[in-house]
Length: 611
Image 1 (cartoon, rainbow, N blue to C red):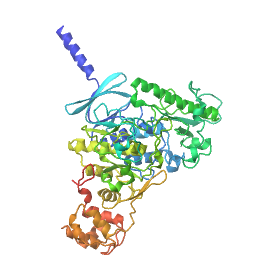
Image 2 (cartoon, rainbow, N blue to C red; image 1 turned 60 degrees about the vertical axis):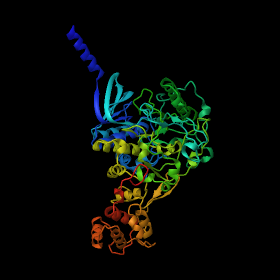
Image 3 (tube, helix red, strand yellow; image 1 turned 180 degrees about the vertical axis):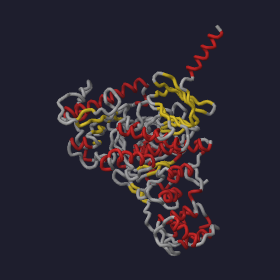
Image 4 (cartoon, rainbow, N blue to C red; image 1 turned 90 degrees about the vertical axis):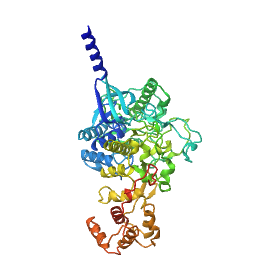
C-alpha cells in the first residue's frame, strides 16, 4: 500500500511538471514584434522561447494576412531590412514585390511565414506553436507561465517576460498600468485629442487573400452569401470620398489592385466600404469576443461575395493561403490594443517637434508612416482628421518599451507607451519589427550583464542595435551601406548635429545632409553639453576645419596634433584630400568627432538627459 501511494505521488508530480522548461527570456506572441525580439535576444546569447497560438510566425505580417508593408521603404532597418532582402531573394528583386499600389513590398503570407521560420532556424530560439497561454505567476523573482499544447499542460520559467501579443493581453495579468482607447487632451497635452477620453479602439479587419484563377467554371472558392449580407454596406467600395487616397480610385480594378500580391493574388484589406469592422472587444468576455470576431469574418465574407457576384469578379477565388479549413487567416488584424504606461510616454508633440524634447537621444526604432486611424465603422467615435496631423519621420524612445511599474517585463508590439494618436503610425509592420528588435536587445543585455531590464544602459542598447544595422534616427539619406552610418547615427542621437524633418505625402522624411558643410558655431554648440570648456572657444560662421578641431581638443585638454588627425583621416578612408584648412562636411565631421571626442560615450537616462 505504501509503495502504491509513493508511486501515485510520483505520478502526480510528473504530470504537474510535464513539459517544464527554463529560459532567460520568454516571449508570449510570435507576431512581428515577438519574432523580431526572439531573434535578437537569441543572437545575443540568451536562451529564448516564444509561445505562439498559431502554427505560423509573423502575426499581422502573415497570420492576419496583412502582407503589404506600410512605410520604412527607404529605411531598411535591422531585422526589417533582413526580412525584406529575403523577400527580394525569393521573388527576384524589388520590382517583383512592388505589385500593388499601396506598398513597395507585397508578398504572399505563407512565404513570409517560411522566411521567418528560416531566420529562427539559424538561432537557438525555441518556439512552442499552437500553444494556448493560460496564466502567469511571479515568484522568487522569476516568471512562471502556464500554457497548453495539444491539450497537455506545459510550464516555462523565465527571468524576463515579453508581451508581444497583438492586443497587449499580458498587461492586466502582470499588474502593468496601461492605457486603452482614445486619450483626452488633458491626458496627453495633444491639441488634436478629444476633450474626453474613451475606450474606443480602431476598427479591426479580417483580411482575405484572393487568387485569380482565370475563366474558371467551377464554383470552388466562391463564397456563399452570408446570412447577414447587406450589399449596401459595400456599395461605395470602388470610389474614395473626394478622391482623398492617392488621388481618386478610378474603378473597381484599381480598388482591387491596391493590395495585389505576387502570383496573381490579392490582399483584401480595404477601408472604404470594405471589410473594416468595429468590435468593442476590450469590454467583452472571451466568449463574447469570439462571437464578435465571427461577425467580423462574416462581414469580410460578405465583401468577398460582393466582389465575386455584385462586381462580377468570379475569377477571384479564396486562395489556399492559410492552414485553415475556410481559407481565411488564423486571426483578425488588430490595429490597436492596450498600451503600457512606460518609463516615457510618446505623444504627437514629440513627433511634430522632436528637437524641442530629448527623447530622440534615446531612439531605438524608427518609422515614417503618417498617422492613420480607422474609425469609419463606429459612428460614436469622435471625429479627428488623423491623416492631416502632419509629422516628420520619427524615433521611438527606449522608455516606451519598459513599463513604469513592473520589473523584468517588456513590451514588443503595438502595446508600447504611446498616445492613441501616435499609435496610428507606430502600429505599422516595419516599426513593430524594429520595436521587437529593440526589446530583444534590452533583454539580451539584461541577461548578459545580470541586471534588471530597467537598469540597462541606453547607449549600450543603441550600440548593439547599430551593430545589427538598425536605425536609431530616421535619417533617410544615411544608409547602413555607408561605412560612416554608425558614426552619423551616434553623433545624431548625441544631439551634436541634428536632422531636418519634413512631412512628405505617405512617407515622411528626416534628412541629415551628409555633404553639407558644418560651421564652427554649429559644432561648438552641439558639443557644449558634453564639454562646457568650449564656451571659451571663439566660433564663427565659417566652416569647421581640422585646425579648428585641434583647437577645440586642446581647450578641453585632449591634446592632439594635426598629424594625428591626418592619420585618422586616412585610416577612416575619407576621400577628400587632407589639409589643415579643409572644409568639413557633416559626414566627415561625424567620423572625426565620434573617434576623437566620443560624445556618444556619455551615458544618458530614459528622458535623454546626461547622467
